Image (cartoon, rainbow, N blue to C red; front, top):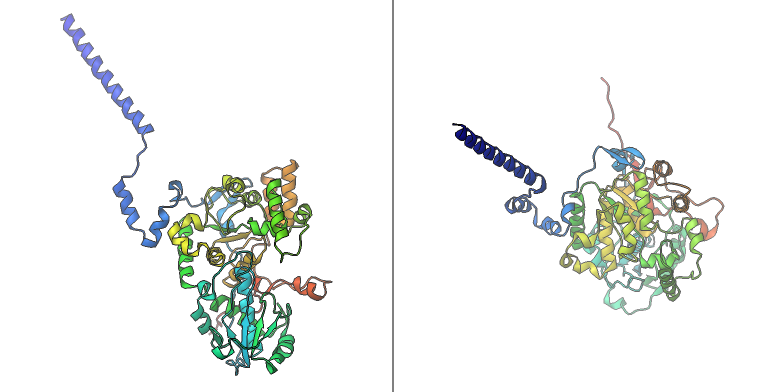
Length: 518
């Protein structure tokens, strides 16, 4: 009897031991074995994407495919920051585009001759020049020949007008303003023409008198350059509105560029609200400006040689420390990272890098990437074969960046060059979308204090950066006139360019419906 009892206890002990081991094994695997969705589930989700979206899905790193949206409040170096404030555009104060001509505006009068235009500079410098030449053609009663794009500048881009812009739309959209043709009539193609460097920032009198007088001897006038040839201010309102119609309605990018730009915007939108960062840390900018912050001595020397060998860059000897202290240098990737963190943007913020090849590549981008790992660009969002038609054409690549920048939730330029100014103006025209313009001169002093250890990266820095940029976010204001005390060309040079801020000429207060009382 006693023996049977011991046998039963032994059996029970074995059963309990097995049960305990089974429970332990289940617990172990439930903790350490991740559960992945089946390939079938993944295929179903993938098939819901359009054909245009699917190619972008394959390129993004797996952990970025579903980047989390920012939470309602973010814990950053400055404490708790309201997410809405980070993305909310400034109040537009009911300003809306108003570019329709006045009742006295007439269709183009009989043409007195043909205006040939050779544009100069990069994409956005050429854009502004083209729009100014539309206005000049109207002023001097000329037929405008589709402008030639600059093929000799630093970028050596072989693109023609129709490669970058929608030529038919440009001609048709301005039909009531200026007659535009694709090329000169055959009988005039080899004839004598007046080649003229139009005077910079000129008003109506100059064009109506000095330039229009050339029609007495010539049928063709050729403008050797197009940049900054028309005054920013003190022009008839109809001429100013024409410049805006040309820039924001007629000068549309070519269909293939618009389509690719839309795909890039859609891809960035899939990550949530995004910043477009115009990071002007490129070889041409650094060589031209002479700025050397965060560069090695070898890199600085390489850029100096480029500057010395570029004949049309007049300034050769540059003090980089003095230039930076005056705010004349683009922010470096490292400085941009500090700036964004101080503003309160969390590390999971998607950022589109609107730029060409960053000088030094990953070695200079590492500091920014360590703070903001979701850094995207044309090259990371689009497969090589989709981007290939644009790759060797700087203007077309810049056009893609332009589209993504204009459509971004927040636009931040690291330098106030032609691209930054053009995008800012376009965003103002479209409703004063949020554009944060870094105060580089003030920021440099803070960055130097960080470098010397007299200021720490934290709440104090954040509060100071936020305060100094409270009124630098693209809110409505009138275009700035010349700096007091300046004279001659310097007076015009100091004015805020027309295409940076089309208010008041092309933006008006929205008329509220009249209220009636019974």
